[in-house]
Amino acid sequence: MSTKVKAFVLEAKDSKEKDKLATLYTLEYGKFFVNFRGVRGAKAKLKAAKEIFTFGEYVVEQTKAGNIVTEASIIDNFMPIRGDLNKFYEACSIFDIVKKLAGQSSDPTLFIEIVKAMKAICYDNSPKYYALLKFLINIFENMGYKLNFDKCASCGAQLTGKKFLNLDYGEIVCAHCRQMTALEVAPATISALKILRQTPYEKLKTVKLGGGGEVKALNLLCENFEWRFGSKFFID
Image (cartoon, rainbow, N blue to C red; front, side, top):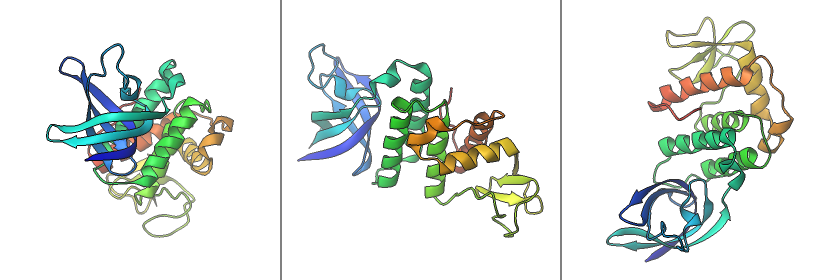
């Protein structure tokens, strides 16, 4: 039986003499493990389809030996990313997050976020970390961890003084409601997160953040990610 999926290649590892074992992130089934047979040969027809970051439609034959990719139609290989280290490492961060978050079930919202983030990094020349931060903000929000900087998530009071990220619940709270695990959120971090949250991916290149806000925001979201999911993700 064969199945057609729309997918990104999250990672691929050498297997046997010329094969590649790969993890796809599919629109239809979430993470999907496949084998590209003979693709390490110089003239292999699926040679380009096995590369990390590749976005395409894959036909997968389900056999006793596992899932074998038999056909592929590349939608985008995001080639400019491969020639720019900043873009490459930012895209690697996106994919590492997906590997750690995604299960073997469909999540169209996450899939669309990957498409948007990859296009922003590859073609829109968004400044370093902006697309990654936007991606993290959106996936946290989609999972119910929206960062609201106007009202305390615990008591509902207006946030006028110092603000804290309560790691236990992934929410912003006031000084009165903070717990032992809470982290103070600097004003530059708050400004960066607010701006990036309301800016579409395709307009990130028009944004200018000050005071090192993007680095501080990334450090905060990294902490939040590790606390939520028990592991760090790759970041350069």
